[in-house]
Image (tube, rainbow, N blue to C red; front, side):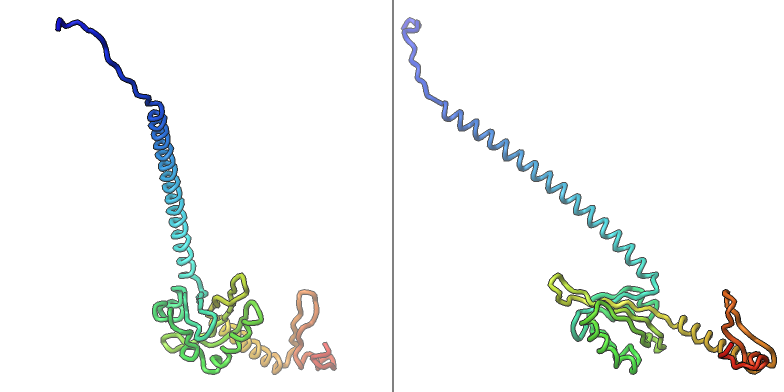
Length: 231
């Protein structure tokens, strides 16, 4: 009553285990936070890598598309079995043959519609040959959208998976009309020059770089009492 301390009452609680648990919880939270940060960093790094790959792939695809656009060779991919649905065709088909990719992709390869009737008969032979060889080349006449036929060199390749099963057929189509017309013109000129040489009353011969006579007209050979093939 006089305000003096008579005694002190104290109680104690053992918090050792609680402190251990709290410490373990803090350490666990720190580990989880660290793992979350590491995971987030990995995700960010992977995302950045994927974005870079996509960017590089896009640039590569753009370059490839540009090369195909200016290329004289049309690239075509089809399913490996009838009706040989077209799965891809390069954009330059419109420049070279007049057909747009949109009107070709997703439909069967229209042999009868765009290939000369005589050549269309050989199409099954090409497809059959692909079963036994890696690639097959042939020439045929392809009808442009404007109705004009063009001479085309085709190379067909059958693509297989790791088990050897056919998965796709790749075609390359190149317009060789100008080349064939040039070759025809050369042959006609050769025939003309030969005809003129054979009708000439002069000695006419052709000698190669090694000094060998490769041609003598009949009048020239007759001067030596020989046939042209004997000189």
